[in-house]
Image (cartoon, rainbow, N blue to C red; front, side, top):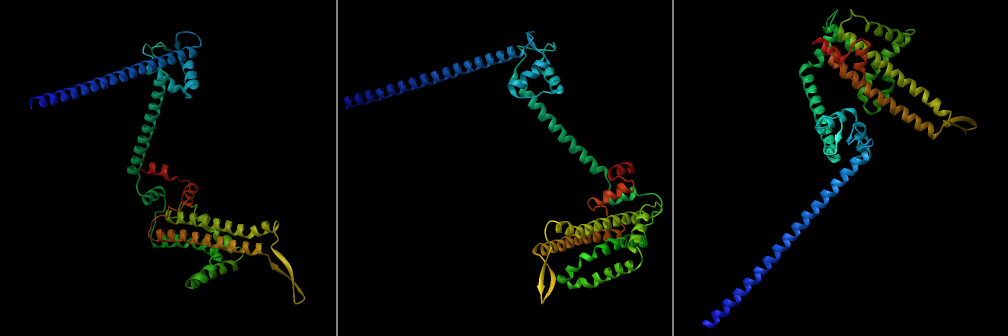
Length: 349
């Protein structure tokens, strides 16, 4: 038994000795790797320092021992592809020119540090601008009254009547553009026959106006005149002006649809001769059919846009509010009447 114990103890001691040897070898390897890493860092630092000194020497063109603003600007452009403006130069010299000599000496110069400082300055300025815009937006939202109140204040002065007759007149102002655009709505009656009585009503008004020499033109001029008169209630005045401009746009659509076939016809034939029962007649070409379809579609879309605008304006006018949210038109009316939406708001406050 004693010999076996002695043998077991000998084996354990040998194993411990091997483990200690491996631990020593591992520690030696770790120490070697640490030393290599330290030497590598020293070499990199030395290389970086040599590069910094070489960059400084190459940039110090006058050999003064320091980089002035022009030399630093050229250095950053050549070695870092960074363009520095006057404000950037002032910022960098405030940060790095410790002795305030007006030049960055060797111990003050670090190209990479300058680059990082410029990047940080840009980020700080961008954040400051964003915060300023956000504050201005919040202040504007707090200071601005509702749009309806705004326009009522802006249009204040003179007759401020907004009774039922003024509201009704504001709504009726849009009969003119509807009558001019009604010619493009007839295809809709094929899809919605319920629209036929409405289309016939406005068509009848247009026909009656046409029976009077220059009737539609006189109608237009009277509305345009009233929209410019300060004694006209603001609500009516605004809607008259908006209706007049809607009518002008519908007239432009009509001119476009009428003259496009003539222009296209000068490049593409729109008719062709054919013989039917010994008679020569003109038949439309495929291009003519396509052009007709496009013209009808454009007219329908223009009328739908007009009808949507008129419906919105009529509802707001009947409610006694100014329909100021029509894109482009409302601001155009404001400028035409000598008003400016935002500046007038500030004046009103």
